[in-house]
Structure formats: C-alpha cells, structure tokens
Length: 274
Image (cartoon, rainbow, N blue to C red; front, side):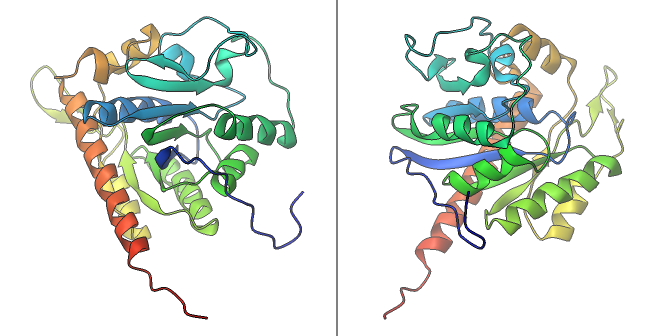
C-alpha cells in the first residue's frame, strides 16, 4: 500500500517506445473495438504494435482476435501473435464463463505481471484496452504503466459524454496526457448515400473543445464491425479498403501525431541546475 501522498513508481518497459491507453467512462461505446482496430491501423502504417487487454473481469480481445483456446501460462510463450500484433489478455488464461471474483490487490498484481513479466520485445506502440470506468484497474495502469497518453472514446449522446468527462478528468488527476477524443458510432451512411446521425452528432467535438484537447475524428456505424468482431477478424484487417478502415487509419495518424507533439514538448522542458 502506498504511503499517503506517495507517487507510485512507473514500471520500466525498455523495448516499448510508446504506451497508449484507450479508455471510456462507461461501457457500450465500442472501446475494445476502437482499441483493437487502432492497434491494427498503427500496424498497417508500418509500426510494431502490441495490444494489452486490461479488462480482467470481462476480457474481449480473445474473441475479437479469433483466439478461443485457453493456454497454460507455464508452458505457453506469451505474448501471442495474431495479424501481426503481439497480444496479452486474461482471457488467454481462463475460460470465458469463469467469473473473476477478485478484489483490487489481485487485479493490481496481474496487471503488473502483464506489464513487467510478459516479454513484449521491441514495440513502437503498446495499445492498452482499459476496462470502462475509473476503478482499481484503471488506477493501476495509469499510475504504474509508462503511458505516453490516453485516447478517450465516446459516442455522440449526452449520457456517454458525461461519463467520458469523468475518464478524461481521471487522466488529468494522475498527470497522463490526453491525446484526444474520438467519437465512435458517429453516423451511418445508408444505401442511398445519405448520412444519418442516429445517436445525434457533434458531442465528441464539443467535449474536446470544452476540455481543451484534440478531437481525433469520427468513426461511422458499419454493421460489418460487429460481424468482424464476433468472427475474430477485425474490420481494419478484413476490409482494409473500406471507409471505416480508412477512418481508423486516419485515427492512427492523428494518435501518432499527438504523441509526437507530446514527445517534443517533453524534450523542450528546461533542465534545472541545482
């Protein structure tokens, strides 16, 4: 237990250049889908990428990446690899129907294992899919992982924006840069070619302006996204030329650009002479 007022020690990940958290204030906004396809989009841009599923209680990355087998941690070499990504998830160790009835210290223990004892090797980006909310798992990752920044996922409607604000504030309190807001399920393009704002529109832009952080873009609704996630072949990989895959490539470019700006800003800080 940390003494009152103590700053937790960040773990060392020497081969990983940048660690990016993908977060949301609530469930149901497609955060895991965004994290998975963002990781694949970064990989399509020629980067070496890993994807860490930090949702201990409800891991979804195994399903989305088409890995249904449960592995023995004593005999299997982790991280696993799929579609060019390095992967780690609690779902590789326990059956999907297993209820993980763990308190905070156990969650902290295993997330620390994922960060420090999994040989990630040389990566340009490690994308971490955080569980929704602002609880133990989120605090463990934000306080111990060497995060380069966080991407906040929201949908356009007000109920999602309220919770997204909470997630954004959490990162600010633990001094993790917010790379920006992405609005998922932003609009739908019908067969008639017209754009329909099913869940309203513009909430992500408004939140980014209010919070003074970049707006990273809009991701449209595409029924194939759910189909691809359920069959274990994410849309960026299965349909790389689709409009939504191009939206993810644009998002990957924006994330890379914002991390570059954060790195430059850090490098320009003056050195104190004592």
